[in-house]
Image (tube, rainbow, N blue to C red):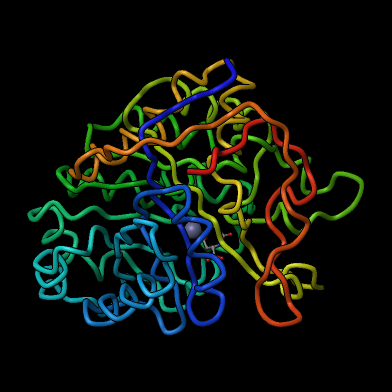
Length: 346
Ligand code: NCD
Ligand code: ZN
């Protein structure tokens, strides 16, 4: 196959940031995806409908002329979120999920939930209204090995949550383990998962290949090869519970290449192409469209896109660096590496 035309995809998990970085990263996502679920982990967090409305407008202002892109907004769940905010979120029409960060689990998760018991009224309202809960599925207990935090979260937190709120729509974001895949497969159609390109392409050896590789570091951290295989099998299975969510998480170079580097891979500048690489290696390019363009829209109850994009088999090099802040660029994931599928210019 030399060309692959597919329905224009959506990104069901992306960090677009705010301020000057927003303008640098929005065009990369908007060029590839018709819509994206925008993460609310700004500082301060996007915790109210009013904050989400203002952030949405700033994103729209950063979309290049002539490009159509719809940001799908989310609210950041805190211990203090009220059921009335959920009502307002649903009424807004532009909020499509509520993000659960266990307090301290990842970048800007300090304001996250300290105890799920504090959110029961909110979960009940979301269950009733059909608003999805988007979960960062890791425990924060420092006693738990960092590679086990997802599996432990599923056992201790997520399984009881789904049992208590059986109708709640839940997305296990950036699933990274075979335990996560098995959990999602075993639950009803209201439980789904996103999968990132880095977790499909790399295992944890990539963190230490010839030295410490900060641009391969994200949370949840890369896992061992058996987990990558399970993710690849899920993504290419055609199962509608699994769909594309890049978790593109830009941090400027100085904060990645540092003694204590930030977690996050900036995948947006090659997002669809990276997935194509992973699907092609698995001999499953024919399954890319369902994963990238159909399953997420169906889960969120949104119409599928009608435009198309085309990937051509043509080697190209991911840029070494891209504009970020003045004197502090962004280093994209796979910088300087050659990919074999390129997005055709419109
Ligand atoms: C994300 C970020 O930088 O906002 N980082 C990451 O490693 N994925 C937060 C997140 O999704 O965990
Ligand atoms: Zn994320």
